Image (cartoon, rainbow, N blue to C red; front, side):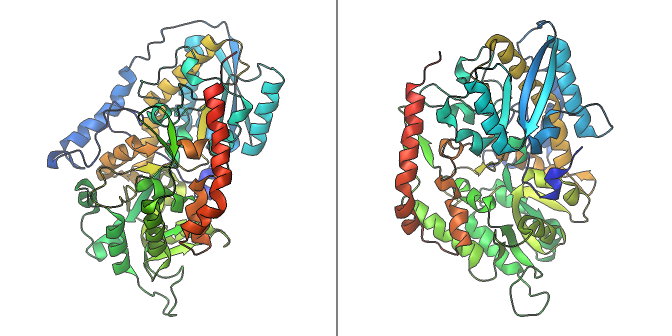
Length: 497
């Protein structure tokens, strides 16, 4: 297995502990459960057993013979291992991906062919193919922001009109319907075949030894009681700071309560606190609502957490090896918390380290917030069906099957890798990750908002060491609002040929 994700500490993956996948509507969250269903008790064991029961779920597709036809997939290069493995090689994840693909190919008598590209080249290549009218690719799996930024180029079919695609099934994220659909149309979708979307879901990792050394209360209990808030994170982090090198300066060599790099992990707080760039309304419209009094307060809170005092060590994006350095600081035992992704726990660096860590959600804004939320890093993969496919019936069948088999086979194996620290499964994190998976947000304003979306404003301001969202809004909102008007108009006026 290629380990390009490990080398850069790319942020990754997710789990569900029931027959419902990340997109299911009936997943219980930690705040919905009572004392008998907290992590480590019988219900968690039953949930783990349910992962095996996924194999019994019928996708309803039946068996069809497509006569050995080729099915071309254009993917983004850094997720190649999640899509294509040449042959079984003894690596559990690689072998599972290989078997998933083999199962679908044999069942429907199709042959998968793959092409992987750097994401910016992939988008332009796909656009050229569609403009030429070529039925060259049957499925596109690309960088979500880059893909959303070319929505107006009419490259993809409306998922809601593709035969055999059933968004009510557990292998599709419910957010595809609830957040990424407008006027009955969705051009990009998130399913379990796009494993990178699971892999890059944000969370908080905590060092169990430091928590014990500093008599930190049981963090799983705090989460399950609904009391894991940004103020609680700040309080616990402040207690931990120690000037380990004795130089009187807060630096990377000291012990901090929280460490992160000032890129997308900063942005994740906005969604964790229940905000969105674009908010679906009850009447089916979408409202841009990314600047209000609550948002101003959120920016100030993020600034205070990351840049005031010695609470956190925040490494700026202009510093060398920023992401790798932060990962090393955490696994070297110099931080109680770090903001990363579930897939961070799956990386070789983390799994091979001596650090025993657990997984908890991003904090809530306050205890009044009904549930925990998280978002997925903007480099995750998203699925689209090219406008030029000649046989939507065949394409829809195969794509639905790939997502169903991923739900049954690849996601449970990935969970198992994620949940093992120091060689053993961290049972207490199971329900936590289940809840995170159910509460991922795929914001319309993030996915379709292009490269100037306000989704990037938190990291921009932190790197400027500023909390002045008001001035930033005044300088930038008009161009973004105008851009989104064009996106919404395209959705409203789109008609399949």
